Image (cartoon, rainbow, N blue to C red; front, side, top):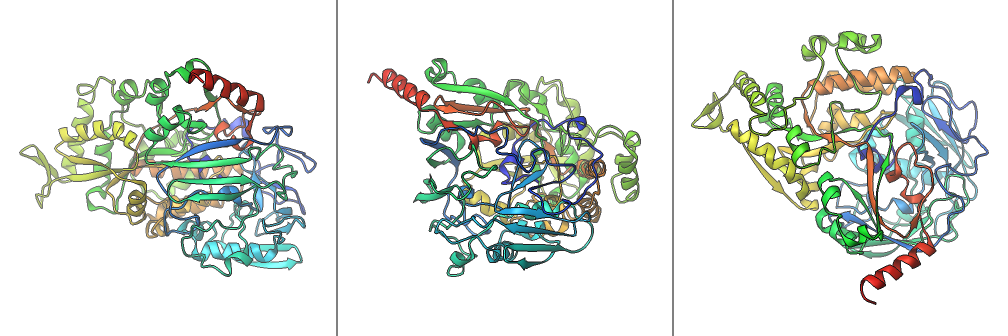
Length: 623
């Protein structure tokens, strides 16, 4: 699991098996250690001075303005209530993830970490010099408070993520141990290492379960200096930050002031960037990347427009069926609608052939299932054979493939629509007077595609037109961020465009994505509503994988089961980060394995570049 969600949500290309190794067994730290890897050994040794994808000599200073979409009415992102701003810059966690390894954490708030070979517990020794912004030391009480506050009052995600923790106890003046219960769960020590630590002395006089616009107390490299609710959030670098010379922080947090401006949608935000109102832009639209930046600032070099290759798994983005709705509970219906989306036409006509079609929940990595099950490795075959009769028969006889067309449009998709019509008839739907209706009740087949970004209409509207040819009425509705969050948290939607980012080391987060318990919890990531005991068991097998090789096989088994459930109409992915920025920044030479978009915190403002840029802007404006 990757920290912050942002990293995990970025689509991309996975790493080849040979690059990360597949035979490492899970093991302990061999005593107190500076770092912990999910499999194998940490890349950076105990005497490392900085990550090699950061510049330890980067200058400090300057400002950066970035964008966010929507609005916010709370600075407490840990609870379900409210529409929160992202405030991660103010907090430290026990450990920090390297973005140049599959899944390795390095001590930050902790001085050492220790876990035995069976990973049945993990113990942290806190650093003596760790301080909150008010000067109070970070304590074991803070760690214990944070864990209980998040699991008991935080978003449902935390209950799933920390569900196997039996207890947390103080074992010394600066030592805290988490004991685990249940089956083998080798990822748990790393999950706990990723725990964001909150100040007990601050929150014990406030209600953690409520929204707030009071800037919270943190221990991180930045503090909140200005709040304009719904409009902007400003962070200032803490000059006496306790960890400014720590190896995991050296070369990062270089910019003095970071402001996040909120915009109604990405189209407005993009124009704000092009107009010089924000400094950096990460593009998610092939069309806009190809057409929206033919402007003087790009042509004369004031804006740099660059693509950075990366080695991230693609995850899954697609049209998501809410199978809590009766209309989508038949797998044949979901398969039929999958036949009605014409990726090839979309890619050719609206996306400049920029994308590759996604055909796995773990695409572009060794974790994705491929080909016939009969040709798969033995562990994957044996796992799925246990569930024969409870899984779709096709898993055992066919290779999963996404529907395709020749990209010509209405004529090219004709055969797919014929096949879709046959599946719908088998499921009890018939066409009467040009409308698809339920053969028993006569109710028409209608549903709504709920969107939060207007740019998604370019995918949804052509899809709706193809559905119309089947007699299905699919309306497309775009709502604001707050309404979208409220409706998705309450499961008040038929279909949305959703995504699940995946890491190179999937684990406990899969419970939140696909489990029965998550389907019943408001605000979980089980957007589909899957409640399948087989999926539940496959998740637990993945979590308990004793080695990298076993993790790969168990992930492939879960992937195969999800694909043949036809829960999502898969979209596409891209092997690069598309980043545009005003030419005032310096950045490290090395792009880490997980991509440049994961490493923006290592960028800095270059004084010479900034002065030159301001001069060119003044000249351009006639100043």
